[in-house]
Length: 200
View 1 (cartoon, rainbow, N blue to C red):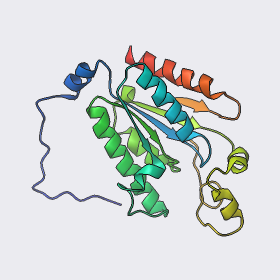
View 2: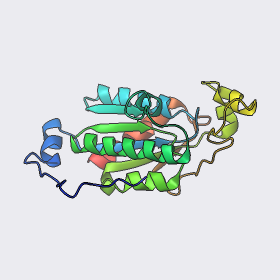
View 3: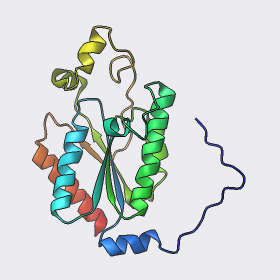
View 4: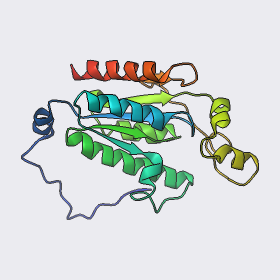
C-alpha cells in the first residue's frame, strides 16, 4: 500500500527537538520491537520489561498488536496487504513516541521481514532493538492461549501465521529469546542490560 502525499504538504520543523525532549526525561527514546508467532510470549515479555523499566523511573509505552486492532488498525483484516499496513502504522506511531523521548515496546507478530526492515529504517541504529521471540511453533500450539491454533487445525480459521500463512524469521535480530528455555526473569534482565548499554 503506497501513501500519496498532497503536493501542498510540507514538513514543519519543531523548535523543541527530540534531543530536548529526551533530556527533559533523562533518557533516550528507544523502540524495542518484539516479533514472533502467536503465543510465543511477545506480550508477556514486553509487559514484564515495561514493569521493570517503570520501576526504574523510565517513561514507557507498550503498543500491543491485539490492542491497536481495536482502534488505530480496527479497519484492517489479516490479508498480507493489511498485515503490512498494520505494521507500517505501528511503526509510524512508535517513531512519534521515540521522537517524544519515550521507550516504546511493540509486540507484533509482524511476520514479514520486509515490513520489519521498513520499520527499522524509520529509526537511527541506536534507537531500534529487534527482539525475536523464537519460541517454536509446537510450544505455541501447546499454549494456544487464544484457541487460534485449534481453530486453524480444524479448518475454522484461515491465514494463521505459522500454520497456513508464513512467518519469516528475522535475519539479524539484536536479541533472540526462546521462552521455553529461558525463564521470564532472565529474559527481562537480558533485555534491561541491553537497553542500559544503549543508553550509556
